[in-house]
Amino acid sequence: MNANAATVVLAHGAWADESSWAKAVDLLQSKHIKTVTFRLPLSSLGNDVAALDQVLERTDGPVVLVGHAYAGAVIAATRSDKVKALVYIAALAPDQGETVADVFYRYEHDDKAPKLAPDSDGWIRLPKEAFATAFAQHATEREQSALAAAQLPISPACITVAVDQPLWKTVPTWYLVAEHDHMIPEKTQRFMAARMKAHVSSHPVDHLPSLTAPELVEKIIIDALRQSEA
Image 1: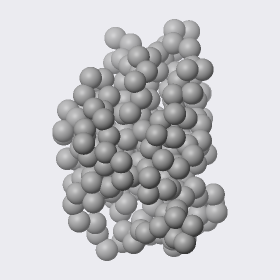
Image 2 (image 1 turned 180 degrees about the vertical axis):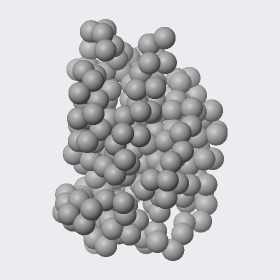
Image 3 (image 1 turned 135 degrees about the vertical axis):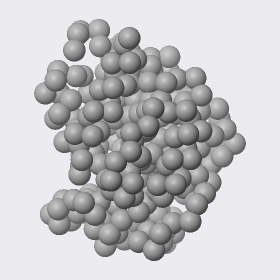
């Protein structure tokens, strides 16, 4: 990639952290693609957008923004003119006036989806067993245990606030549909991708393909990079 190529900025979803992108980052960096990962506080949608904006402010040149799961709402809420493309990896994309919860619960989940509710501290945590049954069932047992140990809980304040006009209405968008996702139903993902008029790539992967199918994640990001630079 040339020196003026876009930087790929990757935002993790709930119950994960920036290390969930590690395999995809390795693949991208092996092709000399500039990449940035960072940690979302997951304390409110506003705080998460602020964390993203700080990263974008420090990043020189154009950006391709990538979001997983909840972070789909975060990447669409920035107003940075550096963003030339959005990439959704099994991610949530509320429209103006909708909340993350609205789209997350738009269609019925299957029986492998965990029951989610705030704990006594007010945070929503994923049950440990859900990492093996719903979150990353294609991962190894060791990877699933590591995910459970490192999970970052999410506040209801992230998912209950209506969003403003999302960036995907004005910026080219790509979407990786995870056909074996037990966290966000495939039907929900296809609805959102169609509504965004996204470039869609669909594969029989779980909710966390950055870990379990990183080559597919790399491919869709590179496609977005190339077309955004055309």
